[in-house]
Length: 284
Length: 148
Image (cartoon, rainbow over all chains, first blue to last red; front, side, top):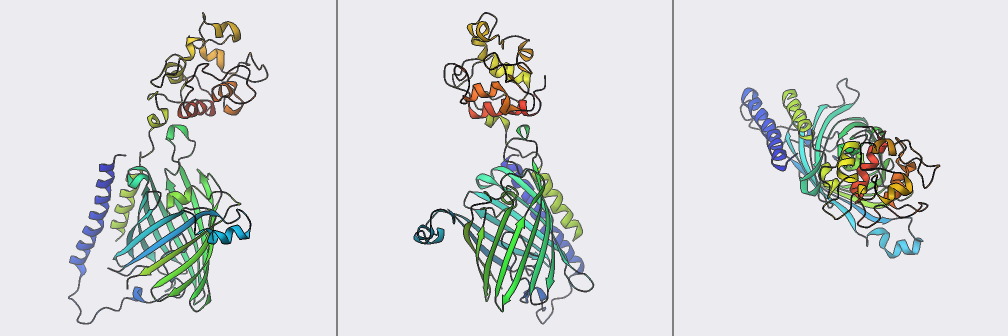
């Protein structure tokens, strides 16, 4: 697919989204209230303090017209390389190169968010999520629909779209569990003439457990259940601290992937684990 | 809202269609090479390429020295019958092309220059085939070496 065509498609997505929102607003918008609306999406959720688990999305909604920023780091030094002295000498991998991701997301309307994530291997991912259900009022789970597309070489090559569903079950004040079936198209970077499978179906499984008032344990595995599945099942676990609008997370993973396309390609191998961190900030 | 969501999903799915990498980028100096027998015969066996690789049929033809030594003719219509399912003259326990099994196909051993081959890596005179050309031949064998 050519680059201009991709830009046209993205413009179409933006037009459809904003156009629809305007139309809805014209049909239903009441007169501006004198008192600002109390948006429950602005409230802190103890069970889902952030929009991402580690790499998988949560079902936390971005409040309308609010935004959030995230940095991801995955250091390239396997933690098992050499002895502990070597590891400490490299400051647990911090002296090595890293795959770094920068992410920004924005609440377009109630329950609908969109964002961009770029990793330092020049992959750019555009993503959106619409939260169909919120847990409660007779609904046992929260459900969000995910759509994304990432492209390598600064979104010029190898486009990898993905569609999925994020299902969450929160446990009051303790945390949340996640099941996220996701279909990733064109996950195999080779030409289709040379491959058996060009798609991946994966199921993200994750949990966030609150162990202290502002401290959580997080973990996720993303087995591929059908299609292209090189490498090993991607897995990550970590610990995180919430501090106001910030979340600081230290994590350990067997791969560097943070976009859907990268996650579909799996972890590096089952023996090497890598140190990393995520830092996120909500702008509200 | 459902209408917008559906539109976004359709747009993204449309964006994803037909966005694979191009085979010609892999094929390198034989830009039209495909994992079909007719293409391999035309672009590899019977033709040189822009990188300077000699055609296989330079020697593997009914009048060539390689044909007299190992009985492999890659110049004619009989090339397929000389390759697929036929034991190698140099290593009779290994088929020249074992459909579906490139790792046990002597053709792959020879063009990859693996240890254990008899004689030289092919082509006899460098440059050898590119990784992409070899990958495409491997794929033809992987999918069963069809006569297509």
